[in-house]
Length: 389
Image (cartoon, rainbow, N blue to C red; front, side):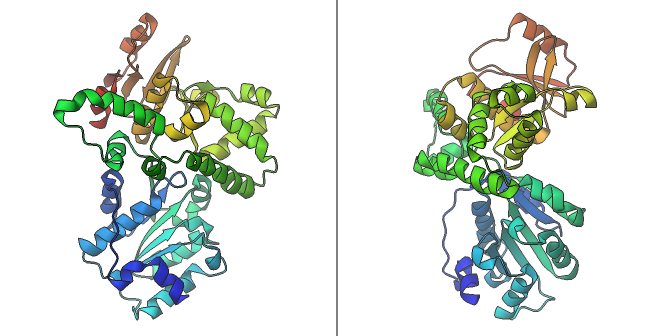
């Protein structure tokens, strides 16, 4: 096991030199919780960059915080060689390997934590009994939600999203000087088409996105929830991507797919819990939010355009805006057949019009709807309006 541990932790040999693209909007939140005892869970779509963020943070702890490299222990718990190993036993073995007493603090980075049996009980034991700071990750929202009861008050969950436009430019090595500002919209349309999955942005291999979705459907949905008809899942997935950016009716989905409404609702929840889609409620009282049909957005623009083709730039732009304001828990406004895209929990009303204008009825609703701030986003130049909020 010592050989495996060393392979996972190359910084122990003092010659580890990795180059990472920085993602400070998430690193800052990881830093914010560094001094607290809270367990920090990174969640989000498979391959969205959770592992890279962990390793980037490890590098920062060694170089800037001067944490001794051997006091940092990383494991990927979906490794089949570890499936019969207790997390507590592995950590005890690690401490023995480096002669680290229980009184000395260690820093654990546990990738795909939920693959470990009874992970929540083991983490609670570590949290309560050892001098330890824990960062974990999971690609399943349901596993974390169902198991967190043991960790109530002991954890913080940080969802990692695909690259935003500025990160995309960084990954591509694109710098837009003031003299070339006219190129920004062209680069932005490239981004709308390619999306923000880090490895795809770097390689451009279109097969990567199909394999990613196939993996999630096969491993994270069909296998986990014992769904036998994976073709039905794939057909529903294509239908959902066609309807991204629109209000979706469970009854209509069920009729089109020739399945019960309960099955359609359950499948939709599975896609949501693996972070492939997001469902946005209608603004209103609690019963309206629960009963009204929800609006659907894709988790990544590149995944969406891969399955639907690059069209309807306005809808893609709206999808991108949703991802940027998601942390503010937006709902959509709908009144007498007229829709406004978003109203956030801090009462910012947002309408997205990509190089187009509000209709007269939309303008009337936009002006009359009660909000602390009203934001109209018409082009990439307007992105600063939401980045400041």
